[in-house]
Amino acid sequence: MELSLEAHLEQLVRHHAELRDALGGSGLTGVDFARLSKEYSELSPIVDSIAVLRRARDELASLLEMARSSEDAELKALAEDELQTLRERLPALEQQVRLALLPKDADDERNAILEARAGTGGEEAALFAAALFRMYQRYAAVRGWRFEILDLSETGLGGFKEATALISGRDVFARLKFESGVHRVQRVPETEASGRIHTSAATVAVLPEAEEVDVRIDEKELRIDVFRASGPGGQSVNTTDSAVRITHLPTGLVVIQQDEKSQHKNKARALKVLRSRLYEMERQARDSARAAERKSQVGSGDRSERIRTYNFPQGRVTDHRINLTLYKIDKVMSGEALDEIIDAILAQDRAVRFATIEG
Image (cartoon, rainbow, N blue to C red):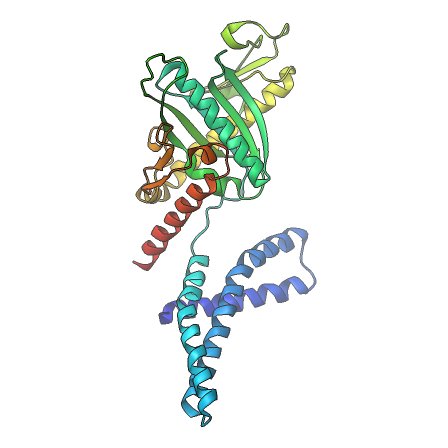
């Protein structure tokens, strides 16, 4: 590793020790203790990686000395064998340290609001939007996440015009943030008598969940309408005005919630979704440089960008951003194999960011 990086690593190790000493002392306020604890815990994995690398280097130096100065032929041969193994390990340990130094997305630890909408393709697009929504629901179950449906707008034939869910758990946004975009499907619709393959699409948006402290909404900037909830085909499913439509006047954003029988609960859910959409707008505007960097990596996260194709006749799923194709569409749709795609995307993201730092 270059000297400047070594100096930076040494600085991190010293700072980690200073934080440990400060946390073990007295006189800290609750706020200061929480702030220092968070910084200490964030630095700990990096310092652990540095310690592993340093132990390996020390061992390398000892083995080199043994191989050079030992008069015992058997001991010398053993040292040379271990040297070879250690030399092969060192690049991976150095890479692990470098990757640990990559700046983290501050929103990675947040829960996420996932929205799926039917795109071009009529009823087939709505059916595919429903299939995607269920794919993420199953994936959440595989990961041990909580999947709470916030709103469903059904077509009456099993499809979804749009669907929204709050997904809670560990690293939810970190793993799902690159799922935003256009998902295209190629398959023979059940209603197609001639057996022709149709192409349709659905859009997915993944937003970091925002709290009230993140986005303050002025009630004066909202238009709130209440109406009776409706089911597929428009039939009334509620005899009271419990459904809520909130329009954020400055941006024109509209959120509708009607799944709960309580107007109060629907309003709270609508505000949660609105807050997350506003937070995402601020996040993109505030971090346009990172958004541009992300576009050069695995996509912009824009829901207008085509990111993936699901070809059912060929049993394949192709992610166009990283040129990855899996011939296991059933396992992807069941959530079992979705990690293979997501892991590859995250690896590509880390590789490009790492190359950017190196350059």
